[in-house]
Amino acid sequence: MATERLFIAIPLPPALREELAKLYEPLPGVAWTRPEQLHLTLRFLGDVEPALAAAAEAALAHVRVEAFILPVGGVGGFPSRGMPRVLWTGVAQGHPRLYQLRQRIDDALLGAGLTLDVRRFHPHATLARMRPEAAAGAVEQFLRRHRTFEAAPFRADVFRLYASELAPAGAVHSVKREFALTAPA
Image (tube, rainbow, N blue to C red; front, side, top):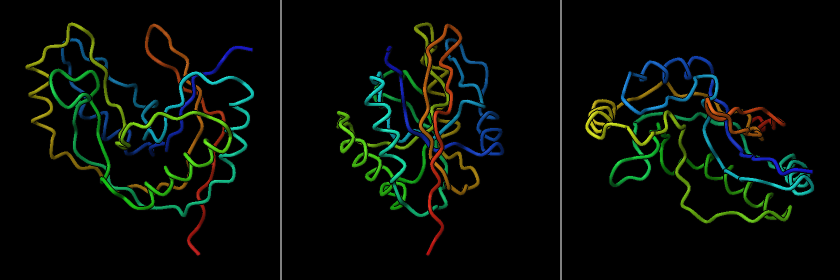
């Protein structure tokens, strides 16, 4: 069987997706993420063999973290120097429950036999991707205008395992499984 391109994320509520979509403006060479595709990335897995995907899904079912409130704000670009390839909005750096969730997901995935990259975790929702013809000046102005952006906090009470299929119009994400976070004791 063929591999699946997988990632793990927290879905964003519709009101937040609508608020983020209000940031979108016509910029040359900027491909905005469709609002229904917006999510907070926790871990990108890439192409995964079917047996490992099944093991990962089973392991993720055992992740236990209490639900939490997550603030959203600011915009930035990856990479942080030079012309960004991605525009994003972030969440509070160092949020203890978010980092606890990420660590428990990583532990579960490693236990299931997956190999994970060791890049620093930068929680974000991808707002847009840059094409080669993107205008650096317009992107810089967008980042300056919105650097203090803040959205209403939201309750993170689930995370999802997604499959991502690359298509000419952009990636299409489908939910493979949803995992509930636990209620406070």
